[in-house]
Length: 198
Image (tube, rainbow, N blue to C red; front, top):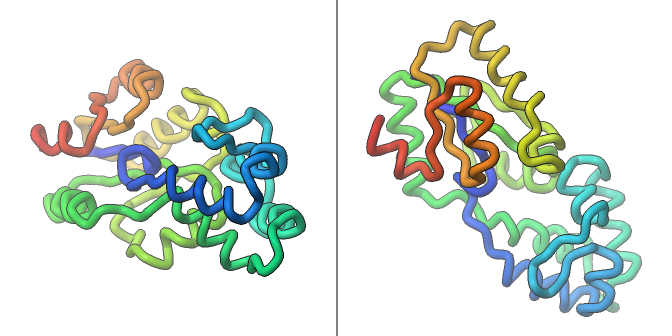
């Protein structure tokens, strides 16, 4: 069995309210929206610094330095990094346990993620990513939902490495699951929904 997992909404536990609160203290609400592109209601502004960084189009140093240049006195670079990583508040232990159990059964695990450098570094600092057989990291995951080439890249990997069917895809976004279904994958909105089958 081959299992394809979306990183963001499926694995990660998000804490947007705390993330917004921290950046509001660092920049002020008006500056937060103007500089970062993050609104107090959690809406992101298209093509903003936040979106470009999340997509991997702006590197971590530029992202942090830009915010730091407009931050309130006393703000450190680490304050900014910590504020950003609050958005991705880690992977709950029970979700990792679930995935480890699938791995122990011999299932092939493929992970989809964006190219957010700080997020990816934070993830590797806290988790053993070798649990996954393959990771597809691309800004296309985040910049377009759905973006067919990403799923075609996964399909190519499956074919090249002769990953065994059935193919199961877990993503919390309906549009992405619909593309997965077109690829012939069985799709699920949550890990728990798939776990009932596995």
